[in-house]
Amino acid sequence: MYRRIVAVFKKLRGYDFEILYVDNASTDGSETLYQKLATKDKRVKIILMSRNFGSPQPSFVAGLEYSSGDAAVFLHGDIQDPPEMIEKFVGKWEAGYDVVYGERVSRKGYSFFWNTLYKGFYFLLNKLAYINIPVNAGEFSLVDRRVIIELRKLDEYDYFMRCLRAFVGFKQIGIKYVRDARAHGRSTESLMSGFMWAKMIIINFSFKPLAWISTIAFMVTLFSFGLMAYDLYEFMFHRALARGIPSIVILILFLGGVQLLSISVIAEYLAKIFLEVKRRPKYIIQRTLNIRRKP
Image (tube, rainbow, N blue to C red; front, side, top):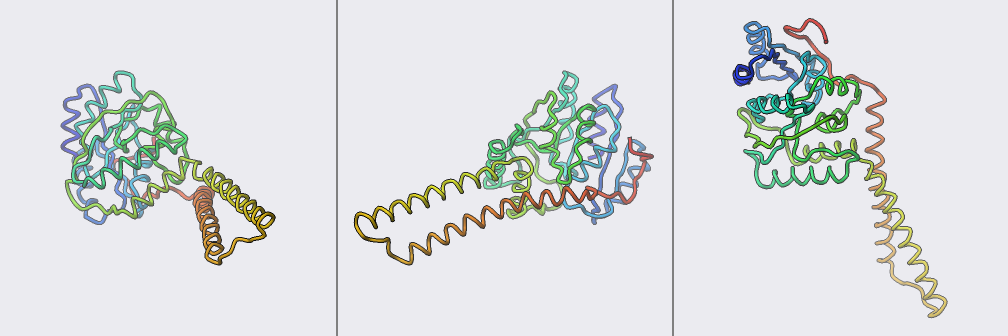
């Protein structure tokens, strides 16, 4: 990554740059490589987390808060997003755009099933979210200093850069690209972890699941009144009552399922509130290299 980024900025004459690595307590010996790079090139700055904080998002937040340039580019360490795209990002930034993000056309190394799931999720998110979130756009992007300042003000525990980047607004544009396969290592992503992340993002950026509870409750109430009216009609005009324990059991299970589903949705929002009100830090830094203080 270091060589590829340096090569990009050799083409972009007139720009000073820094490379800020944020290590989320990796166990593969990366710290030794960071120390060598930081000693060799003072433009390389290192942030070492005190532990693994579970996702890349705290690392992006730390990088955002310690960046000092007129703009910042977010890159994942697995180099699936090509650093060579930075040149195109800078071109759009010079043209007046405050946010330039990569828009994934497809993902190499992913099956048709996974690519379809990703596209389906972004389509669903765009329909549910209360803001317009670009489809197939990850963290890979360039953001102007004005955007950085606004993103720093968002003191949320569950920090999703791609969504909050859309929330702050400003002039934005996407550039299509094909995301590469992982250069090294194996992804820990699974269907269950993907589902959990999708659920968390939807809870953070949509109120529609709560609205659906009201809609379902209204429909169930109408259905119940309809059954009551039918039973009353049968009793008054035919002197008959609806028979059958199975129908009663089915109704009880149906209503119980609706209630449990509604409670679980509400519980997700309560858990979100619980995390936010505790105000725990999103990350803790163990030490830094080539960084004197936070800008």
